[in-house]
Amino acid sequence: MIKNSTSHNIVRVSLVLALFVTCSAIAQTSRVFRDNAYSFSFRHPGDWEPVEAQRSSTRLLLYARDGSEATANVSVVKSDRRSVKELDTAYFEGILSKILSQPHVRGVRYINVLGKDMAIVDASFRAELPSGSFTAKSLMMVTIHKGNRFMLIVNGLPEKFKGPAEAFDLMVGTFAFH
Image 1 (spheres, helix red, strand yellow):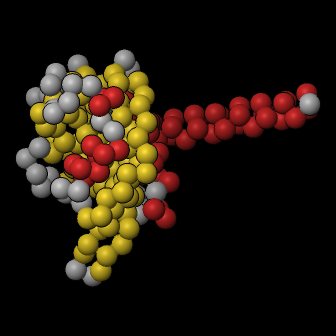
Image 2: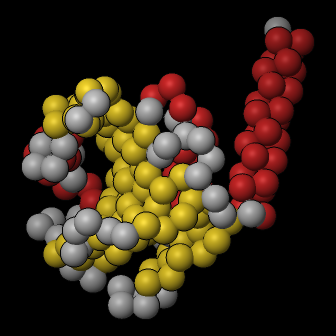
Image 3: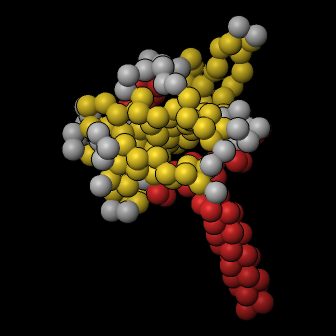
């Protein structure tokens, strides 16, 4: 019993160290995005480059140049809820169905980062292109600040989502208001 417990602890320590090394490597080559109008900032991988946004509510649109073909965007709109805890699966399926084809919210969980409550959403949707359609994966972070809803979304191909998931962790872990 003690031997098994010790091996579990070694595995846990190894996983924590691997995560730390990965996040440290990404953070060392990252850039900071700062939005002075809404007083927020976050870090993103250095090989994710800004491109022109398609919507007026989009504060930043990034395209991954790491071969993953992923995108990230941050939008800010007036919040229709007072608390992040009011944002549930039905809420996210409702707003996603307005902009995406066949959205499916797999889960919503609530976390607190740097003193700010956030909803983390795991979702998928059907991407429609002239060349065909495919299923895409999304990770979202949503928080409410000074009456506005801030939504950070990372979209990508499920089979190439390891890098984008690490980028999402970096962005969410460094998302701060000033």
